[in-house]
Length: 405
Image (cartoon, rainbow, N blue to C red; front, side, top):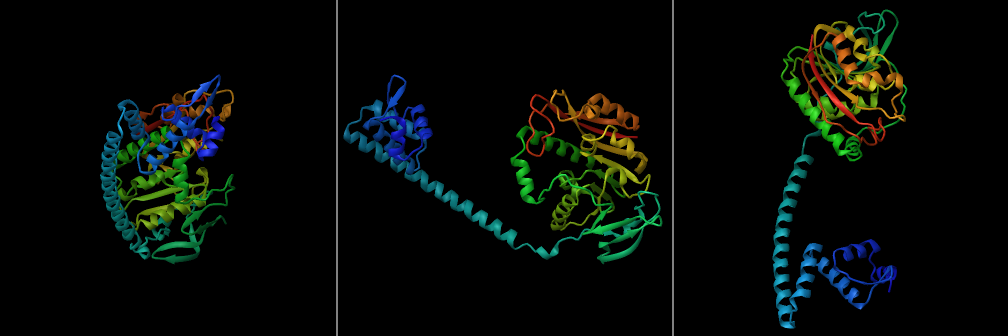
């Protein structure tokens, strides 16, 4: 019979039959360009399936077939061989069962521990009343006053801030909103998003991202952050903030800026469940419309802000938000750099300068940052569903910069 009929009669896929053929476990006769399967092939297939059902791997089965074929066993020898074979496998399975039961017990204890955690002890993050001293109208730099507020534990959860120039700012779920921003797409930001991001992103891209996060986290820990104000441009779902959150001093203020309030809500809920309260101010706005006082930022965290901004703008973001920074501020930045652009590149020609290493270095120099250290990653040529800003044939890498002025 031909392979299709053989697979149907024996209820196995054609791919499985071909795999057994490749391993030399099923050896049909080849006539012309076709394989024909006889009763011997059926017997071998039944033996394979029977041994698999007893826990033998295909490698072990191949060894058994080899011994049976080359050993020329008598009936007595064959019975003795199989008896020892099955006894050894039985002992191996018993050991595996004991190991699995121990693993199951440890998993049960971990699950019980997580289930018994006190969900009511979550930390509450909102707009701390003490943050009002650093907030200013993004239009005129005047101070803001509270006109409406739902206040819990010294934090504004919902309310309104007002400026004398008539501009008004909303606080929603503990997040300061400058304006309603139009979304290009909808995303359900939850732990499934993180899992999907990891699953649907190329492993080389993830490796580079992980290394940059670890290096940046170590670097920031070397700075004295006591009583300092930090500003992150484009905090997203908090890949960076969550890596350094526990190490932030209690008197440090971390301002997280992003244009998507859903990202903020997700990140805020994750941090609140951690039950470790830090001074985090979530602001939902465009980067050029941040309602904070001029010359107030000690450290700028430009982890993804400038690169994301550069997808749609010709100007270099840091030059536009320089007014927020102190004269002696520190910069920790990570920038996407293109080694080459294809004709079909997704980056328009007028925006490409800010993805070129020489231009990035020149712009950082123009912003008067003196380099303390910089790191260049290896090339990446694949992204994924969420990192789909470059096309086949283009190579990108990351440039990490630590500097002070």
